[in-house]
Length: 89
Image 1 (cartoon, rainbow, N blue to C red):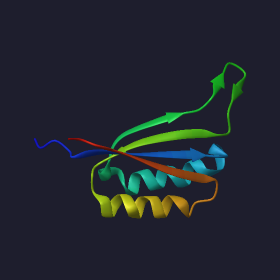
Image 2: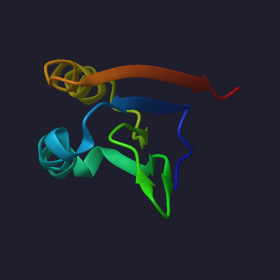
Image 3: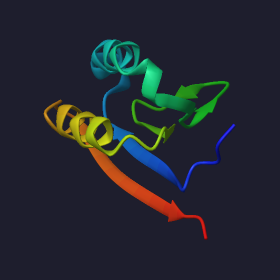
């Protein structure tokens, strides 16, 4: 198996998870073959569940698909996207 030349990470800040969650789940299903790892973070206690959240995606290094994914995400209301790229020597 060939090692990836870099790690591509998308950070997705979601406001109003209850409203935007269905749209995001559909998005994840559509692009599922490009997503290696998905981690969801939000504040929760016994008596509080935050309406906001953060999702981290580790993606395959397919630059055209990543560009398309970012473009699609940025069109959704209540979504902020940031990208991190870590190159390997």
